[in-house]
Length: 259
Length: 258
Image (cartoon, rainbow over all chains, first blue to last red; front, side, top):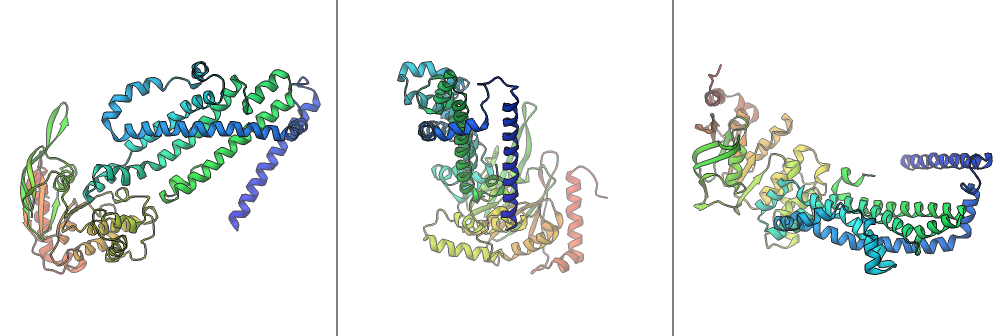
């Protein structure tokens, strides 16, 4: 009960602060310090948000769908490469140079190549965002596996486990918390890159809406689009945080309580 | 029986190989509780790892029941100094013990029952469902012991198993270890830097020391069984042994005992 009280109080604090910010915002709009058309009032933004609600929702779904597909694709590739490099030194030596050479490439620099390969459609967005989010997965899987406490591996050896069994029963579970943390970062990256690709190539999605609204000078809609993007990001992050906490519960406080 | 034959180990130092220990030879007969004492850094842990088949020696060889040891042998179990990090944190205490039977063909249910039995032996009958990080250091060490027993080992290698424990927990575990000998059916090799602990537990103490570690002394400890924390440690004979071991350690360090 005490805990519930505290979280209600925390939430109240947070909400009141947001309310104060909104009041300040309204004040700034009314004072006329900012030229008209650059900063709509919270009321106008809210109005746009409600009026365009269904449209925004549909576009948000497009963005989320692309983000999740990119996350899936990039995550699988990143995890595959990372686990491969972690458990197999020969694989690490062979692929190391190629992967390290590719990694510093900013994902948005791949947009022109994507246009050439896929034209302007979903595959372009997904490929670019997947490229970006593969790296956090790769690093966390590789370093997670290599960072497994050698005592656990020694223990597996004394128990008499073979190489494959050791990887399956000891190395992968031991590296799991690090891998999950990498996945969480990767989802954020996938979302951010997805929105930036939409900004550059305004074909559907929340980023595209923001881009076109800015060009058309519809400031209310622009702010509504930004707000919606933020909300979607928050939702994705919270969803994954919840899943992470559940998955890592057996690993103890140090992993499952992380923000 | 474990047989160590002119075992040597080196480590890289200033671009060349410096010896950790050299020319170690001794046998551990079945059923003996051997304590190995020596200053820190003398290679006690490395020696134990060589016996366990986890580390390959630079020269010489280890034989277990006549078979050369080059990988961990079934029948031999090792308990590491840092038990908090050798237990699988994602498994409960009981699951950790069950996991030691990974290669056994018994049914999962039989394994759980056996594991529960070992948890009872180490006095943790009711902590089976706890995760290692929910247990105290002493309890974690007990789980590690239960896991070593569950592997069906007739030889236990223990690396400073009680070093990080408070005196109370330590005394309890020392007596547990004596009880675990199973009436002399198990061979136990324990590495420690605590001379009193070595004498209290063992049938025989091997003293290591010197610039490049060699055997400084090999002593049969004929203190009567069953041992008792107060009576055994208070006996005049115990003090005599203690003085003798400290002399040998001091000699190994190149100084006279005060």
